[in-house]
Image (tube, rainbow, N blue to C red; front, top):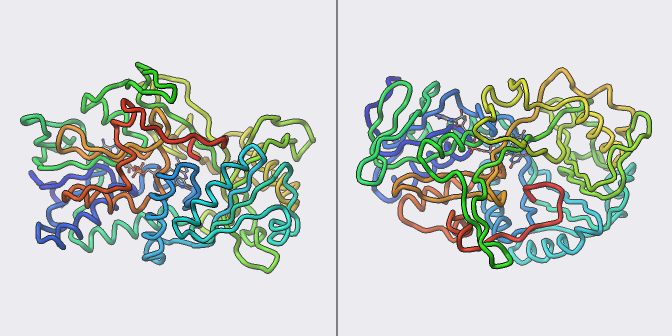
Length: 441
Ligand SMILES: Cc1cc2nc3c(=O)[nH]c(=O)nc-3n(C[C@H](O)[C@H](O)[C@H](O)COP(=O)(O)OP(=O)(O)OC[C@H]3O[C@@H](n4cnc5c(N)ncnc54)[C@H](O)[C@@H]3O)c2cc1C
């Protein structure tokens, strides 16, 4: 397909957000008699699912300490449920298993999930033993079991979503890199690519971990001012920070991780402050709070999951995002992760003891995420006609955000997206912070 010289809507990035927005925007335009998918093109410098969406563990959950995040996720979960086949979605449920320090927060999540009609159960160790006979994680005082949610297969869901967008006449151009923007009267009038200029009326940016680059190209501020909880302004807070996500696969039969009654289990997420000891020689790995998540996954071919990410203490301009994910020479997991994660699996369930040699060390995994100053998403319009979807690495599960963004582009403000405007930093409208060791909980 030859690249057009103009398109009403240009979407940059063929990940979960770019594709979901393109697909839903096509439907919205058609429903309102204001156009259709022929008015939309998606540009990706590499291909469909070439970014974070294509390597995500694929966990889909509602469980968030922040009410606004929870409401948004409940909306997204319903979109996953609307077409599980095409989205390659497995609604096995999700469990948040936590220590005393998080007990109060989990109780409040439970109460609020029930208030928004979300089916969940709260109980304790006996509940875990009822699911897995070999459960043995220490210092656990709360268990929250979401019956909805689960996980989806990353690449397959992206291809399914791309197919849906194309079925609405959206054109997806791969191998096209956006290099800049042309301005007209404040707004952007054209997108510059490595293959020519494309005039447009509106741009949607969904570039995942490449957002610091596009942000810079748009000459948006490198740092921001934040009104803190103490009422004081904190100036010059860097807008972007990279974290490296650590994930991997234990090359065992996925059915090793099944419930006592032989069923596929929910995704398990454990946070605890119990000391973690090496499953190999019993030495102490950490006496600080730690957390892991895992699920049996036939697509990854084993038990797949991850642990808390680590921050990249470097100027974001100096972080090499490309080559991305498993191809990166720098940002993939190493031996320390394998020992920590498998020891943590064994800490939780006896069946994983002695399994370190099965860790797929030969398959690089993990990848970068670009985080905002408060580690929550920014969904907002900049320069009059550029909608930026910067999910702060929360976002594979946020399939529904594209639908809400599409409605906003058509003039319908979304109550669910309101708490994620850029202005919240200056206004001090910050989200509450949980005690989880993960920056995204
Ligand atoms: C290892 C890992 C595991 C994760 N696991 C989960 C999980 O289990 N659940 C969950 O909810 N989230 C998870 N996440 C987070 C989630 O994957 C991301 O938040 C989400 O996929 C981001 O989607 P996106 O559409 O914004 O960007 P991406 O999926 O990264 O897509 C961006 C696209 O933009 C393209 N692009 C970039 N720059 C340009 C340019 N200049 N011109 C043209 N194209 C460009 C890229 O090629 C890419 O295809 C995980 C992230 C990582 C790294």
